Length: 401
Ligand SMILES: Cc1cc2nc3c(=O)[nH]c(=O)nc-3n(C[C@H](O)[C@H](O)[C@H](O)COP(=O)(O)OP(=O)(O)OC[C@H]3O[C@@H](n4cnc5c(N)ncnc54)[C@H](O)[C@@H]3O)c2cc1C
Image (cartoon, rainbow, N blue to C red; front, side, top):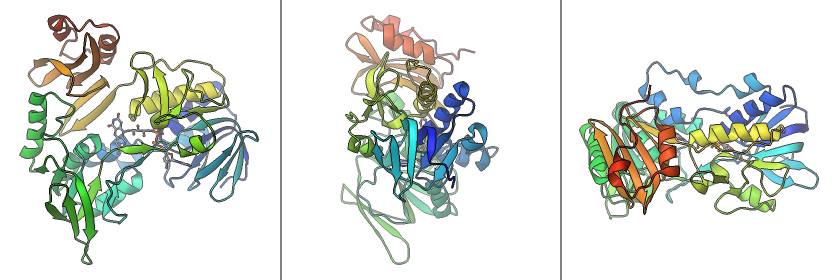
């Protein structure tokens, strides 16, 4: 570990925002010392690969997932160090091992902690987020073993698809009546669920995990909310994350469900910025919100880094998010909530779905359609959804290439 205890730029959290922020700083300040306080032992990694490419793309090596933050930016990473207090008057961060780090500018980038669904802490129960979780799930799966996946949103559906394609028997437990039913219109949700059925995933709809016991022989008995039980070799949980905002709250910074920042990503303390999964920011199109997706982490982290180094630029990027299952990629901007009215346009397997809230568009789903994110942003910002036919034709279902 470095002996340095003063940094011009200090970042708390060693994830995707830390990487993009360090790169943003370096665009304006080639040599100001950057420190990264990182609870995780492993360096910043492209997390999306942990639930997709590392399982499904044989040409993608593990080393391709590392972000190479330290080599590319010269930042010093204090690995395995958890920040536990911020003295804002002294401008000092304290870690749980008693290290004191002075900063000139501070960035909070602490991400989220995966929810446990109330299941016990055990080696065979993986609440999935990190490289270590990926390695553990690899050890616990394959060779025909049986893994129960809890959660039908992004992480759950991606891991269920990944595991079943890697010699693993998969049972997927999810609360919707149809997989994807709370996000997608009903026809698409049926087709989405059909992909899992065709690949041999056992689906348990309308259910949640209610408890688990690990037997002495290593078998896991997973109790479900519908009274049934799944016996398996391991459980992987993907039921959302809780943003790590306690440190900000304890330090007296303003928070709601995230750390409140202004358009320049400053918290209520002008020397402290926040970005990524923890930041509640004023999106130019979508309004104030907190987004737990990679495009937001990369773009917001980059902008925060530039602002730490004095740029004073607003974060004016409305992020998209994406997922890939069984080779089908979808992207979206805004809110995907099937309780909104949906307007759909399909051309074979490619489609655009508009989520309509009164005469406005709340979200756009691009299913298998590339290069139309700006058109989706434009629809949310400007479309008059009262003319449903005009809306249906607004974004072509062909790629913009
Ligand atoms: C498996 C997986 C797959 C994903 N796939 C997609 C995808 O396909 N599409 C998409 O749009 N998004 C995806 N995401 C979401 C995306 O990766 C996150 O939005 C992004 O990583 C957020 O970056 P962050 O820096 O805010 O948080 P993180 O990358 O989680 O980094 C936060 C870091 O801070 C550390 N930390 C927390 N508290 C402290 C402390 N007090 N002191 C020191 N360190 C601390 C944590 O240990 C962690 O390492 C995925 C996420 C995961 C987990």
